Length: 159
Image (cartoon, rainbow, N blue to C red; front, top):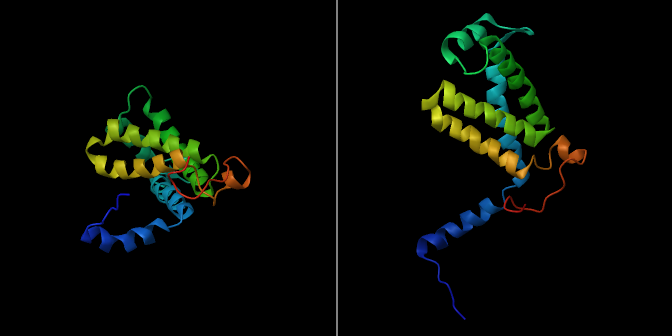
């Protein structure tokens, strides 16, 4: 029988690793839903005045963002609607994986066509959204309450 001896740093870190392993997965998944949702919601709020698309948003899509394939009016409207609808769905945990994927698509679009130098920021958003898309919304979600997401065993590494 082979005995593995931990190095001194590994022995010192073992209690910290054990403590972190006890962090609730459902809390981590809730945070991965709420914080990106807040970013997109705030961005959506800058695109509207009341329930109408703001002139400033339209100007940005005409002059600065200039997405290919979509007219600026349509792109601005779609972005404003998506940045309000998907964050709400993420926060309450309804159609969570779909919402995370939609916002991940928006993140990729922003990264590729609008702000290519902002990859560190967009990478953080992408990691949170990928976590939710891959692992689901967690226990504190409407998806779980109504049975769209089955209960998972403990641990994010489980399927």
